[in-house]
Structures are given as C-alpha cells and as structure tokens.
Image (cartoon, one colour):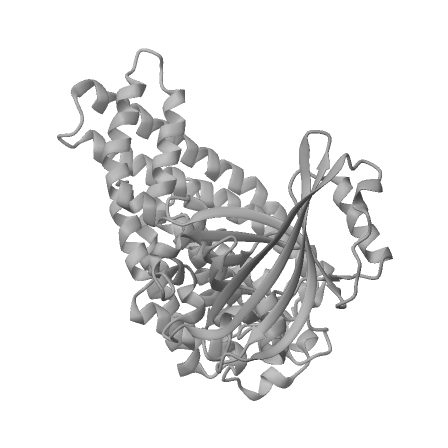
Length: 512
C-alpha cells in the first residue's frame, strides 16, 4: 500500500459511551469523592461545529449511523457505525483536508444503505463542550463530556437547544458504572443512546430503518409474517456483511457472510415459493444467484488456500512443505487478490445496488398468494417437508462409489433443508429447531466432503503445471492423496450420521 493510499484510509477507533439527558441547570456531582476515583482533571471548555450529512429520507440516522464534518475541537470527518455492545460504535476518521463534501472513502462504506440517494447537509450543531477526565490510579478510567448544543437552521438562526452528558469508557471497568450511578442519582436521565443529530432532526430520524428488525411472529400469525421477518433478518445480514467487506476487504469472514446471506435469501424464496407470486420470486432469486456466484471465486479461493496450507503440516518431513506453501501463496494468493478486487467493484455496480432496492421493497411488500394469510403453524411444516423429501431422495442413493458430483448435489439439498428448517424454527419452536440441528450435522459432513474434494483437485492441477518443480509436484500429489482420504472419511461419517438423522422421530411435526 502506497503512502497516499495509507493517508486516504480512514483511521478507526472503538468508542463505548453512555448518554444522559439533563436540564440546563443540572449540576454535575463531585466525582472525585467516588470510591475508586483518584482524581478528576478539568480540561476546560471548547467550541465546535458539526455539519451532519444524510439522505433526504435520513437512512443513515435511522440505522444509527452518523456522518459529520467537525471543526474546532476534535476536528475532522467522522463516520460512526454501530458496533457490538450497548453504546458501542466504531468511529472512522479522516482529516478535514479530505474536502468540504463527504469524502468518497467514507461515503463508500455506507453505500449499501444510501445506494444512489445523494448525501446532503441535514443539520448543523454548534456545541460548547466541557470535559473532565476521570482517573483511577495511573489510568484514565473514562471521560465525561458536558455538551450544550445549539441546532442551527438553514438561515443560520438557532432553531433549538439542548444539553446532554456523554460518559465514555477508556479503562474504567466497574468504576464507570459507579460514575454513571452517581450521575443518575443527581437527576441525569440515562438508559438511552440517541445521537445528537437524531435529537436535532426529530421524529423522522428516529423512525425505523428501511429494513427494520422485526419481532418473531407467533404460530397463529399469518405465514406472511414469518416470510417478512425472515427476509428482513437476512437482508440486514447482507447489508452488515457488505459494510464489513468494504471496511476490511482482506477479511475472509466478510465475503463468507456476504455469500451466506445471499444464499439464505435465495433459499428462503425457494422455501416460501408456494406462498409467493412465482415470476416475482424467481426474478429475485435469479439476481441473488448472480450475486452469490460472483463471490464464489474469492470465497472458494480463500477456503482452498487456507486448507491446503494447513494440511501441508501433514506431509512427511522429507517433502518440501515450505516450497509447497510458497507455490500456494503465489498461485492461489494471486487468484484471490484479483477476485477480491472484482468483488470490491461489484459492490458499487448498479445491478448490485438495484438488487438492494428490490430487497428493500420485498421486505416492505412481498408479492404473496392467498395461502400466505393462513396461520403459520398450518402452512410452514409442509414447506420444510418438501425440502426434506428432495434431500432424502438424494442422500438415500449415495454410496462410497458415488461420484463427487452426486455428493455435492446432496450437500446442496441438505443446505436447502437446513435453511428451510431454520427459517421456520423461531416460529414453530422446539421440534423444528431439533430437526434443524440434525440436518446441520449432515451439512457439516457434506461441507467437509466438498472442501476436501475441491482441495484434492486443486492440488492435482497445481502438480501438473509449470509452476511446480519435480519435488514440489510430488508433494502436491501426496497432498492430493491425503485430501482424497478426507473425502472417504467424510463418506464413512455420513453413512452413520444419516441413519440417525433419517429417523422418523425428527419429523413428527411435519404433515406426514
């Protein structure tokens, strides 16, 4: 990475903070008297101005995301993204030199949310900030910020004013809870995490996101509700994986989650197909299939390289394992790098962004048939049974002599059955969950079978190329033989597990 590229890459920091609403006359208690506090340093006050950017329908704010340009204290461009944990956010920063408009490096990270909607200035906040650092021994336990905020209208006049406290944890541990309790006892109102701009923008900024987090429907609710909740859950997962990939393209888990979310959505549309308008569902499935296929080379390349490099440790000591790893890094590493660049470009492709528009509409108003209005408990078991019937037909015919293609076909049928069972399990409960767990055992074994078969084929291919010396080619041949041994081990494991999974007791909740 060049120096210019490093300079343009956002700096990321994790912040964990609590917010408190207070009135204008609120007095912060003397925190230096609290148990565990060794000192409280007053850092004085500072003036800052923050210009916030969002789409016209405030998509970022509704997702808990903020993009701002701040001048004065703590200046720079800041993109704040929700992170795991209460009150936790990742803040990505660029210097003000990045420009007066939202920097492309930050705007690109949330493109799956904004898509083709332009970012525009939605609010300006002028803040008087007083800061205190809370110390415990030699450590900074946390920082308390007291903000008096003025909301500035388009005409430059102050449209509103409010005050809030932010308690940010640094190395505080339980001491931060003590400080928070003292603030609450003094009259501060905690328990909320609302960004300043959301308070400034009002109810529209606090509205549900365009793809909301939905509650689990009840068995007596229409099957339609289960479908919508399923679509919403996995569209949100797809969007989260998109942001994760844009932030860390080299992380194999990010592309894996992208592919899994796309496949689950496609499989869900297949499972719920009897309840859906057929042309509508098939068109959406086709686009999801296109996207998942586009990720295949990168994901499979990551998996193959990791597996083959790991299994080099099983080669006999007289074989050149180090040279084999070097060849794998050169050949597969180059393939993966090229594939990663193509996926990065794909995420900004108009077809992909249009797919997200269609997914948003699918969650809001899927095209369903009348049966979707029947109770979930009456409709959903039969949908899973259809997937199971196809799996049983494929798996019952497998033998140790069956070609890899037939085992792969059974794997795909098993994944569809597992996804179908997991789609309905939150609504139907224990029996469906137990069935899904059983099918998961099968998918794990068949997944190992597929990975080993592909690894064996790749090792053989590399052995027959000009890249490999005679010694390396021989070692790759041994590696291929070892992978075929893993294939046959998976087949043996499948035979015993399938007999157990095949038992009728796991399917008593299905129609027949």
